[in-house]
Length: 140
Image (tube, rainbow, N blue to C red; front, side, top):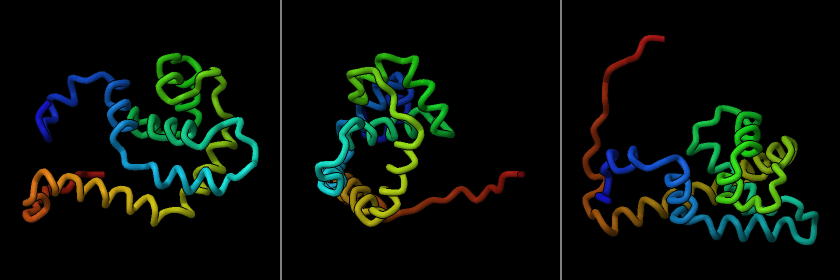
């Protein structure tokens, strides 16, 4: 696979793209923070599992929680990839609460994406030095 070859990514299936995101996103620090905050509370839906399902929603372009939950309900491979081994899809309130937690950790999430940019710069030292913008304006 070539770096920045969108053709290679387009040829991957949805689950393969999600697997890449789950494997390479530097989210361990955020997961540790969220797990520590949870403490000894209920662990019916582990932090990592809910996070992975949210990543799935982004990668698979779901526009709402219910759409994601429906897909998780019918797609055993997706549940397995996200870590839902017991096949129980989290209820909507779990996502609402988790999203509120993520909003509280906006700086940690921003740091995670800055780390991704740093990793790209290690491979491509000139990354980001030149910026091109498409000036076309789309009609509403």
